[in-house]
Amino acid sequence: MQHPLVRLITFLLAPLASLQASDVLGPVTNRPLVGVIRWDGYNGHPVVTKKQEMGFLKPEKWHSRAPWFFRKTGDSAHPLEFNPSYDKSIIRKITDEEIEYAASAGVDYWAFCYYAKYKGGWGLRDNFEAYLTSPLRSRIKSSIILLGEHVGKGLSSAASAAPDAAKRDWENLVNEIVPLLCDPSYQKVCGGRPLVYLMQPDELSKILGDAVGKSASVEKLRAAVTFLRERSQAAGAGDPYIVGMNAGGIWSAMHVDQAGLNAVSAYRGAFGSTPEGTPYAQLWDQICKNFIDGEIGLGSNPKREIVVPLMSGASHEPRHAAQPDQFSAGHYREPAPGEFKSHVLSGLDWAFLNKKNCPAQSVLIYAWNEHSEGGFICPTMGKPPDYKPNTRLLDELGAAIHEWRPKPN
Image (cartoon, rainbow, N blue to C red; front, side):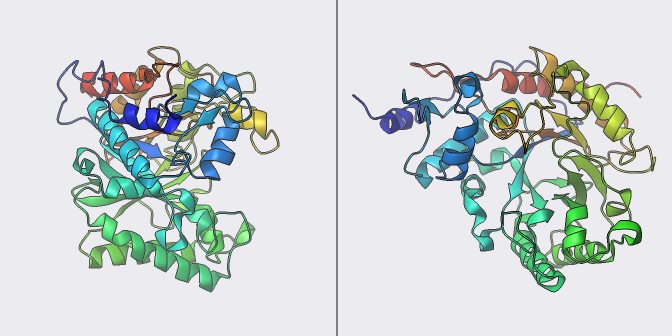
């Protein structure tokens, strides 16, 4: 009997399934950009993939969420398998296939959660490294999401270093990413400015030593942002367009406006989640109400700039079931057929009709591959023995991108 790994490699070498919606209509030149977040925990890493993510997806009811390159083992103790030897060549092959999928749907860029190379990457930058060396790289651009909470420390939630050490760590991080901003494949907006996302600017501010509470300040955060701008411009990459974002909650506007960031967005803006599951069809209205028109959006500053946050889903039920103390019961139900397409079209319309508040002309979708957390456009695992990938959400995204047409103001 053929070994599962051999069967997987054979499958990966087969022609990519065609996207049904990719050629419905020709694209338009003035469409807002479509960016999609990537968090790469599905590469075969012995801890992140095998212990964490395969643990969350272990129950049979969640197997349909597994990415398309996973396989069932028949072993109830370890029912899912991928890349058991943690082979980097397999990661490169998978990444090439994902580039084909995303580019065929019309995705403009991936926003990679960035884990510092000089810190080892913790097994969460393998796909990014594969993207950087891929011969298909020109088919889709990249952007990076800097993770403020990891500055001055590692991946764990352990206490951060002293402010001076955190400042040096930030400088090391900036020096590492600046060459990426110079690369032709890096996503530029607003006339050639590299698009950089900064997650948890409020946490970074605290780590760097800014005061919190009633005496809150952003002096050190502002200096860190200035350092990034100066290094980028000195390297010839231009002045970065820096977008502050949090996991979904709202933080003080001072961490955006007063710190010198350009715009706001959200990583996983599941506003309006309920334990019984809010209908997905209500998600766009909740994003408008609680984010775009809320205090962090235009509600407190009508001139504030926004990269429109969208979501392919917002149900972390597998994580809540496994770790109820860490993950709340609140979630959205998974989108019914056609609802994700409608959601994307609404976001593109808002960006296009509100250019003064969306000068970057981009939406940012959660997510390509947050399979256990609830956002996954990446095709999912089909049923054995054929394992034909389920591309429904990708097809809906492709249809929205290719069918969108500008609406009159």
